[in-house]
Image (tube, rainbow, N blue to C red; front, side, top):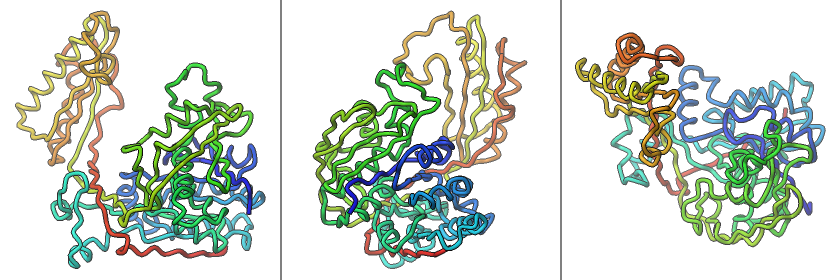
Length: 455
């Protein structure tokens, strides 16, 4: 058994810093690279892509990345954990297999596939069998939006990852694998932890939580003394150095920018946390109030004392559904009286929309540079504000009404208040709204499948 396992965070979201995972692989020793690509709405986007093209539905950026780092990973025996498979795990694995073959790595790579999270095609079967799925926040039944559902994915934990690694996989690809499970799985595999060792599983879960958002725990987006954080242009992403007893150190590669401190780690711990005593995942209920942090040298924070309790009998399901259409347009007004001009333009636009008889669920007007962030807490604005951006957004059930709104922004330049200085991006685009429907489903209904293929 290894006494130290290094899991590096390389991707906090789909679209994160492209150089980060490459630097994690090449700038120092690591055992595992975890890459988190998915968010709730991302699944519906991928489902739409696959509906248009059966070979699509996964994060193609992952394949581009693996083209660059796969030889390094093979040469250094670095294993990669990712949920880049989206709604087409097998398509993602096939694309990766082709990359490995093109790079003459045949016989040197095993790919683990974890499926079973996508339950879109099973929703009606569950309902027919009497399993009622309801919104866990509002109690609304799924039937109320069933005809609009675009995707439905269960948040799977670390179990499939542990199995894939146990079967020799070097690259593990799944769909809606939890962010935390991408780190917990390797630790459970390496240290031989079982799912009844709640404190250890909780420790691995919290390790995953700390590095799941990329540089957010190593100096990025850090509120504490952010002006003094060095070289954010070359920020180093976080690494967990874990021990068999569940204690671990958060650090980063030497010579990289950013800062790992008790403050930066604390800020990340607070991210997306509800009840600190009951952080529920598919694998464990972690107790964040038990976490202890201590500085352990430059850019090193020790995390210890973590407690946990048994997991629940349910999986969380992320369901996305179509909820109408939206569009956002902007104009920038300059001094003098920039705020007064922007307010007048907003009023004029609303009057024109009313006279056209357009129907919207919401018309939202914001004044960027005055109070868009802080609302009434911003206080009374100065008449000397040099420029204000008027931002108007609408949402509604009629696409044609939203499209007509997009044609009413530009006319304000010559038919409204004076001194428009910027018309950002031309005519606004109409976008479909994807709404989020969170639910619970008994674990007994979900069948997870693990396959391992050798290139």
